[in-house]
Image 1 (tube, helix red, strand yellow):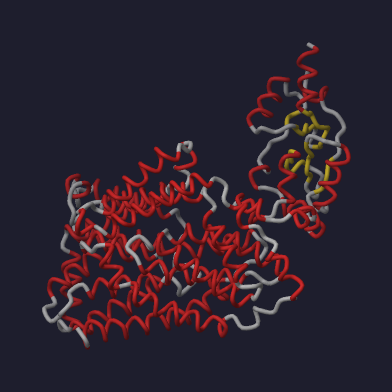
Image 2 (cartoon, chains in turn blue, brown; image 1 turned 180 degrees about the horizontal axis):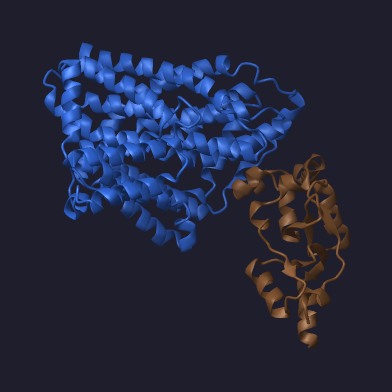
Length: 429
Length: 147
């Protein structure tokens, strides 16, 4: 049974990585095969926390997708982005830095793909007015999105999977991930003038064109904005107050989405427009396939081999997880990678005894998977979406143009992460 | 009555033509739409006038309509300028390429069904593998009511 489970999983993984067949179809077929062959049963697939579909992940994503769907109708991010660009007084470097900061902040609250979809049109508008090439701006924003998304539980899908599987709270992410994200962001902004040098020359006469943009016009419905703002504040307050309220993030997101639907009075097609059904089904298929590896003992065996390889050394295991996660996530989608790694890291956390902070392995996985998304143009969904937007706007970004910049930022962010993990959890821990 | 009896001569534009010429043709003749032909002269797409309006909307506004109001009046008035260096195939929405042509012997119902299904204000009519003419919605209704 273990051999069949491994074979199904490896074939599915190769097909997902090759991107030649729809990845949702592959994940569902893989899940269907292990179910049909009896490797995993209905109880294991639908009702087990260890081997089944992680409904917390599915419903947290679903709830947040609806909230984002309503939030997008307000135009608030367009307002903030244009307001920021105007505050830069037409200096392209300052505009890039401000848009990068807006993107990173938005990515911490929303998923990265949504953030990119919101920020890219504004960027194209501003760059067109300045008559400058938007490509460096779009690349910088997607890199910032992948960095910023790492800071919170809801910022990046790998974090949602890790939080659910490891029992980590929203505040755990704020305490352990946000500091290193701020450090990496500071390093990234310091590198921006160097990485994108030659991209900031502008005709001073064009600056007035940016200053004439009227950001207030982006707000279509001020009442909806107020309602959304209140619900969003309540949702994040409930995330932060988990230790007091004891309401799971998935339930909070669903309640927030439900309240927003009721008070916004939007049409069904509007609030469901941002729900990515394919992504949710992809997750479901993936969890069933990974569950079959757990059920057949493959994961336990892999964890035992990893422990033997590192000789139970906590620091070495942490660095191994970080060092492997970044390049793997950069080449293939970081979602299936994280879904596969979580049961292995869970076993490792339990088996390695010299860890003062057993959760350090989870932070290594999260940092590697999140920052690794910047490595190549296909490392994260947001990268692929941004490349598509750029192509449609007649400003195509080549794979290597992105990867040259992404590789540098990934190396810097992983090096800083390694230093952070070592100092915080091993030297001063 | 068959499609070939209803078909009228109608201006067509090549897919390699300048997009500004296509927009100008629609504006000057007040046409409900236009048939785009490929390099061999066969119908490639039916382009309703409402879709030609998209030509002058920047892609970033199509992606995010809330940005339309952000652009000031003087700049918005110059929106058509960007069409000058684009060809029709650069601005043709993909979903309009699939509108099929009617056959010369199609009935009124067949042509009407085609028009309704693809929400197209005009349908090209093919005869012996060549473009025979075009049926507009008003021409179709006229023919239907006359019978």
